[in-house]
Length: 97
Picture 1 (cartoon, one colour):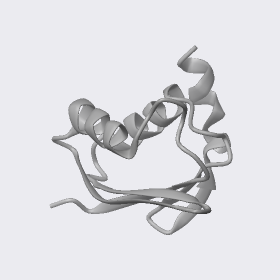
Picture 2 (tube, one colour):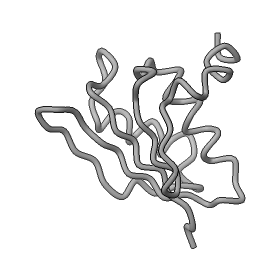
Picture 3 (cartoon, rainbow, N blue to C red):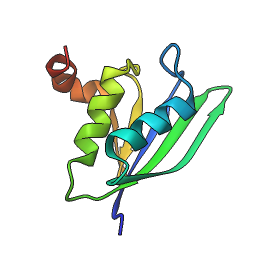
Picture 4 (spheres, rainbow, N blue to C red):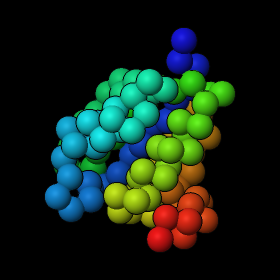
């Protein structure tokens, strides 16, 4: 059973990506550890809702993926109720360069 979540809130998607692309990429990358439970786009931005296994490395892979695809550092992550900006994980950004 999936026991943790991350809700991702962003102002805009990285260039040349759609929500479908992001969802497909995440499913291809770690589909056995996650479930995308919702997505949406509106005037002020969008969201991707993901449930995952806490004892897996899924969250690390999700964060690494967001950084590698160029999500803005102001992207908000609600990780099991703890809100952080993607910029708080910048050490991962440098690991991906």
